[in-house]
Length: 257
Image (tube, rainbow, N blue to C red; front, side, top):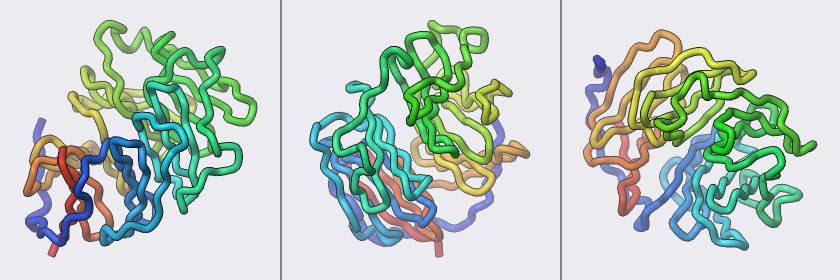
């Protein structure tokens, strides 16, 4: 894999923005950073890392996925409980979500990862029958069911992340790479970036971390670039000219001068 480095700037530390570990992080269209801690608390921060709003769930569960890219809808998924909740931009539960909703087992056996679709439905990878499903929240029915047993070897897969972006669906499998589907769930290709547990999207690029490096991949040209990070990052979020880095212990805000 050839990585082309296009950033010559070194990130400069601005401040520490979190003193506790986070288990999930996302960013909305207004560059607000949303995090989840080990106790399930959700917190929203502005671009400079100042806390804005918080949400403490009625039932404590491990947050498996956190998606804020829709801005007006923030999705929180609890894999172990097979439950999810949707919050508004102020981290207030949307109508019908005062308590987390449970996936219907008649339609979804065991959801491994999920994300919001552009039409307000859910994309879910179902471990039970090894398929990608689009789930209608209003009717609580599966609209699209794409079996993946002909694409992946069922004994080898490890699905870790999923995201719909620019009319495509990207799903990370640690063992094969980033699987790419169209917006109807049809498999298109695999991008050979193995070992990923998380990625974000910006412009025409997917970006992700590996130790002390932030990598970028153009989803159309497949050109690549990278930024050297000052510390090994568990998560990294770009917000304007700032970079939020979360390690196993804390979160830090950096700027590009």
